[in-house]
Amino acid sequence: MNIFAIFKLIGGLALFLYGMSEMNKHLTSIAGARMKVVMVTLTKGRFRGYLTGLGITMINQSSSATTVLEAALVGAGLLTFQQSLAVTLGAELGSTFLPQLVAFPSITKVSTLIAAAGLFTSLLVKTKAGKHTAMTIFTFGLLFLGMDMTSTALTPLRTYDPFISLMRRVETPILGILFGMLFTMIIQSSGATTGITIAMAMAGTISLEQAVPINLGAAVGTCITAVLGSLALNWEAKRSAYIHVLFQLIGVIWVYILLSIPYQGERLYIWMLRAFCEKVLGTESLARQIAMGFTFMPVINHIIVFPCLDPIVKLFNKVFPEREGEKPFGPKYIIGERLAEGNVGLALVMARKEILRVGELVSTMLKESRNVFQSVDESKIDNLREMDGKIDILHKAIIPFLARLSQEELSKKESLRCMNYLYIQNDLESIGDVIDKNILVLVKKKLDEKLVFSKDGTHELEHLLYKLDQNFKVLLEALKDENFDLARRLKEDYNEEEEEKYKKLHMERLASGKNKSIATSSVHLDLINYFTTINGHISYIADRLLWLESKKKKLKQIEKAS
Image (cartoon, rainbow, N blue to C red; front, side):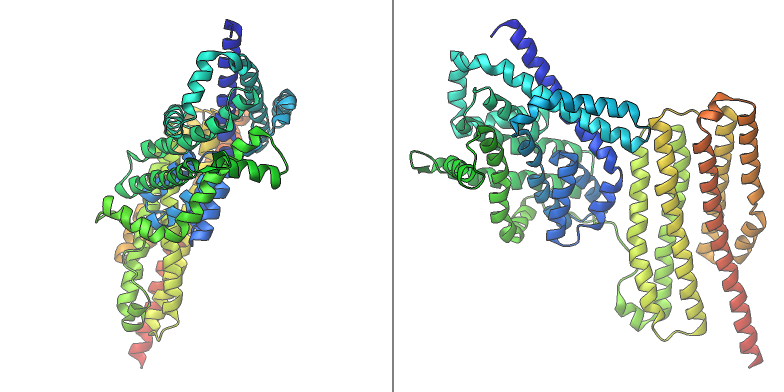
């Protein structure tokens, strides 16, 4: 193996790993923040959770990325530890999808065409989603190009005695597993390890007996990313990462047992793979056999683990027990239908307390929105989105609770208050949605496109956000104490003309040809519109308080008259 073959090997590996990493990034960008929403909303029940983990991992092509996201959601209280279990198992199977694609060696012949198509498309498309799609195609081509280069560079090793000797040692299952685990802990991708073993198989430098143990070790080694990602999170997040390691170890043990059983002159697991590929898939391709060996591990594992999930979790809880004080995020005061049936007045107090929690979260989102504009740290955007996720959790508890409560026998006052809480809660949740689905999208656009507002434009936007923040603080005080005077003050101070004034100032800067104003115009004007929308929600909630005041006064008059 000469020096140029070594250069080609290093370059091929670099292209392969870069292609896989960038493809993951662009696929994730296409799905965007929806992955969090999908994971939070589609994990009710183990089967749905399993499909969610499988689907998300097939999209982002990284079980590590899925389990890190899952650990973060568990840590934030948006997913329970129990919900995360099925997602973890689904992610394990989803991570085997890319190696199945890589096992089509014929794709390597058109890898340069795929890369060229992706690159030229990226130059032609204008939309952000289009560019991410084009770059996904480009990096997919790079991945196969790197694999082809690696395979070609490794061909001389077929006759290199030291390498042949090393591979014979790796054929011993326990040594192969340890090698695969250590290698994957370094590159942090089990899919990449499997891809490399397939490339080696295409070069004729590795056998199925040698590849299978390496890929078994890769399944455990990939857990290091989730474990490291959970270190800065709370105990529940750490537990969701640790059980990922346990599940993978169980799978490795079962496959190791199958590898240790001799059958028809070879190991039972190896015989199963060859028989399946030949009789079911109709192929003797070594690449396909290696890919199926990687896929069969989670399949066999899940057939065993799913029926035994409860006792496995009980055993796990003895080693890594739950801790008090770290319960998943959810309602604090709404405790179910019994309270509503037994004491309507108290139920309304509890609902009000829960609504005030939503108000506090919205207030924090508005305050943090000001910091996000001045920062280049995208994690702050994720933090705000997690807050909106918490608002959604409370919203889904409050609205049905109030709806059930409204069916009870309520006095006139209680009925008015219950109805008002429904209106107020809906508008509070709408403010969170405007921040999450509109304002943060524009902030992300500002960061991605490195947009810089003019000095005057920045000052005006910050002033509007400051006013929003202050207005909401006043509203929150009015809600806490049912202070109608504060609500009236908000209505008196509400002024749509200020937003219009700032739009006009921006238009004047556009007319004068200021470059920064021209570059940021659409973002700037959309932000003002969204700030106006939030102010409208604040004004409406103040209106609801004043409506309640007027209704209470009328009831008093009726009571006096009677």
